Length: 225
Ligand code: DC
Image (cartoon, rainbow, N blue to C red):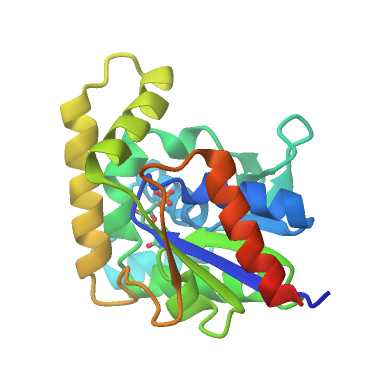
């Protein structure tokens, strides 16, 4: 079987990470959540009061950031570490979610993250999810999946996820955050979210997790032949 790179791009809360994680597990590949990297950088900027509209401050701050994925023995997947600290939970907070699209639209931030992502794919055998993985990070990936789902379904999924951590959150807040992130992600100047010409669309509005995994696995196995 051929070693390949699988990219999973799409809007926020389409279930990209869930599918990418399950695919990686089935194929014995490494799963990489590229969004976690942008979230960790955002967390660093927030904690250290970095003025990210100021290029020199961003460049200087990035020199002090070390990102690493390390396996979590309980979940079986990798957690995001920022300068040696496990930040997997805190990077999902609303404050980070509210600022991550802005931070991830900065040229220097993207160059920093993309270089590391490309390095992780040198040996192939990875499933990476994000927004620009099939277009910019791995334009030659063997299998590119572009995920979509109906907006209402995405808001409900995200709300359920957020509610577990913060029961005070409202559906309206979640909806606004998702809409704003979609807008920034698709309209930013560098590597905007768009479907790669050779990506296959997977609309999971009416699919169970098992069904979407089965479909993606079939595509992956075809490419691995
Ligand atoms: O997948 P996520 O929601 O955790 O991603 C967080 C943010 O990071 C998202 O709003 C857009 C940005 N992102 C990006 O610009 N490029 C990627 N490859 C992954 C995420």
